[in-house]
Length: 282
Ligand SMILES: O=C(O)CCC(=O)C(=O)O
Image (cartoon, rainbow, N blue to C red):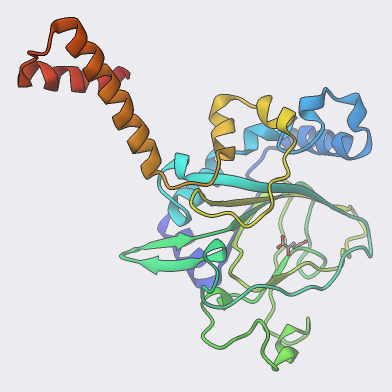
């Protein structure tokens, strides 16, 4: 993220990146997700639900990773994708349902800033595949509420939650735009009120590999149909130190094998050499 975007995300709890996808990419994706929604049987089993098929390449789209590396973790292998769904709304459909907001109380929603960087938990990435007009159905936010000091979630001051309280804001954006927000910011769905097109948005919830908010619900055949690079976004929840332990166990195995092969008298220099080879190729 550039510094401007970083500051805006930290300040407001969300950011809008207009027209990230080209018109042809938007058309292809729209056609694909509508087919998934309306006639899934016409697709092979591993493409019948998200994150499969044409959507898969968005899992680690550079514009998404650019934000997530700055707000969740700088290492891709520490980022999980825990939920994806299509939000399709026709004129008049939707609801007003404010939720979340306030300082971190649940690690799954965490929003922290420490030593010069953001450490966010669940982060929503929304691909808006159809035009959104401001105040007419895009997701609404109370900007800055991820850092609220007062309890705005279940305080008696519910008047803040009214849509016309004056503290809510939304966005307009062309098709193919990206909206990224911290789940810790107070936000709400809205009623779709754009006569020109329905809302067609893909919601993705990313999180740090240490935590999960959603109950796992991806179809196994869909995950199996992804490339290994994409599959790693669906690794189980664990601390990355276990990767290092696995690495060390692997190294021990190589040492043992080398000891057997060369006798027990491997000098330190040779051991270091083996170690570096194992590190590179093991
Ligand atoms: O439908 C929307 O615009 C917002 C959905 C929402 O509130 C959420 O994903 O947490």
